[in-house]
Length: 320
Image (cartoon, rainbow, N blue to C red; front, side, top):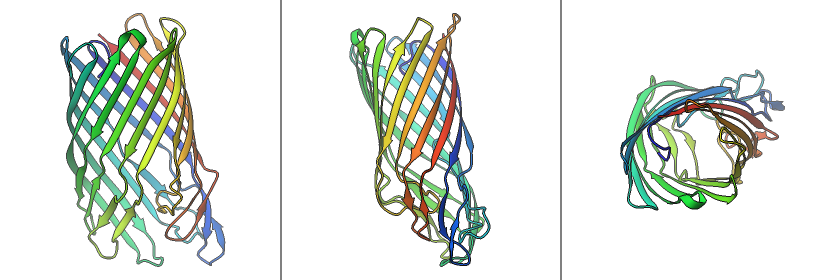
C-alpha cells in the first residue's frame, strides 16, 4: 500500500526444512524419527491502484497458513502419522491519506483452507480424514505515521479472527484462526541507509483444531501466544541497486509441543538484494536461514534438536 502510484507484483518462495529427532520406537527402544518436515513452495501476488492523490486500493493474494508433516520412517512409534494443510487468502484493502503524516488503511480478508490427517494406533485410536475446503472472512484495520524527510514510517495493522469449518471424510473440523497485530517501522539513520524493524504478535493461546469425531478429538492445541521480532539494515548502493541484512527472533515457549509441529521458537538470518531496471521493473531476491529451537513433543515425548530450514524468495514488481 505504500508503493508510489500504481503497482503490481508477483512473488515466489521455496523452503527446505530439516526437522528430525528421536523418540520411542515400535519396539520401545529410542529410534530416530527421520526428517518429518517436507519442502514446500509459496506464491503471492498483489495489485495496487491509485484512485486519487490521497486514496488507493489493493488486492492481495497469498498462502497464509500451511503444514506438511510426515513420519515416514519405519520402526518409529508414530510411523504413518501425517498431516498436510494448504490455504489461500485474498485481502481487499483501501488506504486514505489524512494529511502530510497520517494515513489509515483497512478492508476485508478471505481465507480458504483444506487438508489431510492420518494417525496410526498409539495410546489413541487410529484415525484418518480428508478435509474439504472451508472458508471464512475477517477484517483488517490499521494506520501509519510518516516523515518523508527522514524516511520514517511506523505502520500498525490489526487482523481479526476468522472462523472456519471444514467438512471431512470422517469427522468435520472446526477452528478459529486467531487475531494478530503487526508493527512495521523504518527510519533513515545515515545517507542511503535505513533501520528496519517489525513485530508480529499472534494470539495462539487457546487455538485448537477440533474434529467432531470422538476418535479424533482435538488434533492440535496451543497454550501460548507467539511474538516474532526482526531488525535489520537496508542500504541503497545506487539508484538501481539496494540490499538488506535482517535478524529475526521468536522466543521459545518452553512447553511441550504438538508432534505435528515439533519445534519451539527460532532465530533467523536473511540477506536480500533488489535491482530496479530503467523501465520501472524491480527484481528482488533473498535467502533466509532459520535455526529452530529444540522441543519435546506431547504425545510420545520425542526430542527434536539441532533443526533448521533454508528459504529462497524472488519478487518481481512494476510501478506505473
